[in-house]
Image (cartoon, rainbow, N blue to C red; front, side, top):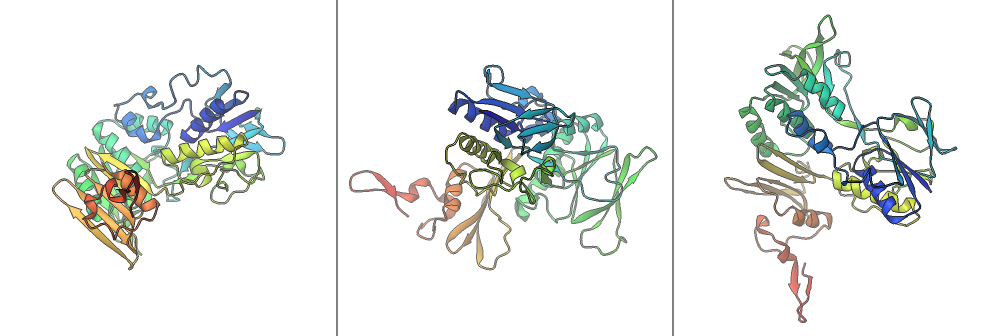
Length: 417
């Protein structure tokens, strides 16, 4: 059986590993627009020069050289999938046939339709290694960079640029940085750290246009208050180049005429199978969590079903994010900014820690841990399993695994809550 995988991220590599390990007769072909696998989570270390491209490679040692049943086709762009004749077709007209296909193409950066933004030659995004190479070309010491967005990826870019001596300004429509992951206090703590290292923040503002010079290079970004109905409060922020980090969209445009069902993403069942019984999808392109361990698990599940095993992906709880800037680590699980009058917050704070727990009907629905994430596994377990914590008679920040188990009369551990 010939299995083809489009994509060389965690889902694609995990799928290939599983196929090769589980069936000695399978031949696997990996197709990717990238020249090699690399961790996008580490791109800011590549940007600031701390890591080389080779040091971003996460594939197991010898994976590509020691598997004679594995073919890798890097730097290839897929233009379409012919699901009737079972061919993956490239932009140069060549094709590769398959018996089973996994699509793990991730997501593409979104660039908002703002005047001048799409035309700016010195406009970058922050998603792929080629994007970062373009940023590095522009990132001269003391040059001015404007970053549109202040989420986690934008902060990654800002961190790398600040390390290179670039003057960095970030524009965010929300009144705080990383608005989806952090609450006001946790966000302000990071904001102060970044400001101490030279970053400038323009919060609660939106971009209305980009000024271009005669060579179509951006020279300034024009902003107004996010709630403004007129442009009277326009503030111009000068730049030598700019980076747009305004979210991503699932990457599946090449399926347009394939007959495979899509909506905002490729539609898949719990076994990662698409509407075509021989085509599977995993990760961002399938509207699933692109978080590293989740995407990897989806690749494994897809592989096993491609081989005829019946297995479902069950870890659908994906609202988890970690970040670490300037030595300060934060974990967020769930939505700590939920707008629900039935929710209440429990906060613990000392000199080094800030913990916030969101509780609804005696269940923890979200948690933010800043300063130490040593017991993150406990909170993942509690939230994913809807455990009632009202019976635990101690402060939430002191909860341990031992609080959920007891020893029965025979000396065995059993669930206590």
